[in-house]
Amino acid sequence: MHEFLGDQDISAFDNTGTLDTTYENDDTWYNVGVGLSVMSSQNTYFFIEKEQSFGADNEDTYTVAGGFRHNF
Image 1 (tube, rainbow, N blue to C red):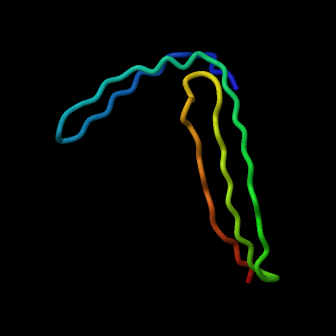
Image 2: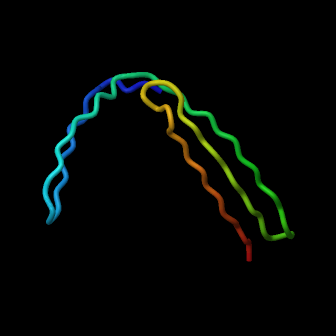
């Protein structure tokens, strides 16, 4: 993926104060993922997946998700 527009200006506030920050995102990165799905019965599946981003400033950026699906 590539971010063409670049900078993002972000402002946030609450009752304790404000936060103003700028991210410089004009860079290229890619995502790699792996997942596993297991059928535990005829109508129930469990899954787990992991995705990690590489490139740009994404040194420690990853997502882990899991869950189940049951068909009635």
